[in-house]
Image (tube, rainbow, N blue to C red):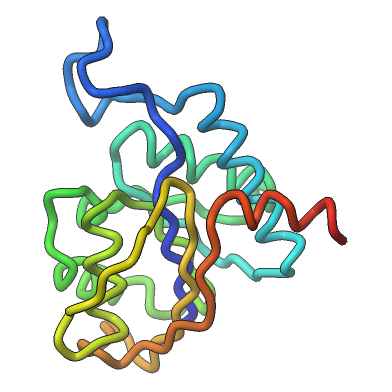
Length: 170
């Protein structure tokens, strides 16, 4: 399975009036544009997408919706509680099992969870530090589902700015 770990795009800040729960924070206008740029960049790279899995938090769902919009309605979008920021990376790996027939899966989540999951996928110690900025994407191949710790291979990692520039270079 090829996984595309995508951190949600820019959301309104914590404590914004009218938004009392972290899970309800929507994307900013810039965040919507960020997500659209990432989706366009993935298409330019000819990334195949069979399934999009997302945290149920509003900002992650809105980011995932931009990917689905870019690829068309044939790509299913599913909320997965294991992609919430308070969950453990191991639970996310196990949650992939019902989706093991999919070959190319975009997983939209949050930091530090998405960084910790990437570390677990590609290292045996889980000891990896990287700047997983908003709307960045890591492409990881895993040989089996659920993936064993350290069994994944990092193919590439790109920021939202790098991905958004790709359509202009094509």
